[in-house]
Amino acid sequence: MAVQPSAQSSTGPSTQATGQQSVTPLFLDSSALSIPTLTILQADGSLMAGASAPEIDPSLAQKIYADMVYTRSLDERMVGAQRQGRLSFYLTCTGEEASIAGTIAAFKSDDMVMGQYREQLALRFRGFTTEQFMSQLFSNIYDLGKGRQMPVHYGSRELNFMTIRSPLATQIPQAAGYAYGQKRAGNKACTLCYFGEGAASEGDFHAGLNLAAVLKCPVVFVARNNGYAISTPASQQYAGDGIAARGIGYGIKTIRVDGNDILAVYSAALEARKLAVEGQQPVLIETMSYRLGAHSTSDDPSGYRSRDEEQQWREKDPIRRMKNWLLKQGWWDEERDAKLYENYRREILEQLKLAEKHPKPALQELITDVYQTPPAQLREQLQALETHIAKYPDRYPPLSPSQDFGTDNGTGNGTGNGAVDKEGAQP
Image (tube, rainbow, N blue to C red; front, side):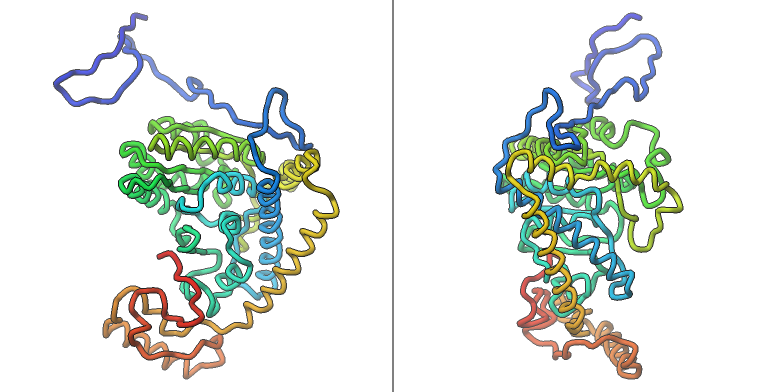
């Protein structure tokens, strides 16, 4: 087959095509591209042959592990609370802790984080307290979101964590746009954007990646490929080679890693942030992991996958793998491990009991923080709601006292709760 170097017209628009030209039909398929999976750490805590661990301080390694254990403990307790009827809904990070911990640990505190709904570990790493988690989950008076969101839709302006939104994949083009703003501002920061492989089937995924690639936005996309989009297995979601192949198709530097390997994830994330900030370009990381829990507390995975399948992945537990590595380094011991679990479980249960007793935010908060002064139609709707609740008081939880709209309320500055509003949530 005769081929010749490609050439682009100097007068016409560039197609950005690269490579060689062909004079006969030549079709390519996924076999033309082979994407390796970065793996450093084995299940027993030893390194793969020829692999080397990234440089990491013992204190940071211990913090990463502790946050993984905390998140697992939080998830177990809150699923239990939902089953007891104390909580309406919950989503776990179980089985995917390394994908989150290994990435967030490689980024700076002024980097923006946009999550999907399993990234509570990223918030914990940055300092989100148990009280703050519980306040959001129970929508009480101390909730930064003022009770307006369903559980697990966290947000924190102070920690540069954009509030979780329910519609799938909307954070992806938002992350590209936010990162473009960081680029224009020249502040040497980037955006970290998480999503699952199911979200990559949404149109927003393609719009967001193309936008980031064309505008050279400093954003790192982390695709958590956990095998299922609710009940739809990956084999029914796409015919190509996962999500990583799509990043390459958009002209984005891409890497695939073992999502249960904390060292592989951390190593890739360090390089990804460097590429994004210093190279002012987008990067895609695909973490290959497994959702050990149900999609949510509304889901029953026994209807679409086997216990044997789940057990195979439990043997690859990312927390156990990191613990084994820490033990081999002499940075951890079984006594500390037992105390860590015990202390977290006690703390989480104590804060749960406190949070569910606090009243809900003032009903007026429903119409604040959008308009400087709530318009007449919103006031009328609020009055109708207040009348309804007054008629059926036993059907609704206790609320904090109502306040008159004034200089400290309804101003859009996130301070409608007065003294109890410790921090305005990220809008």
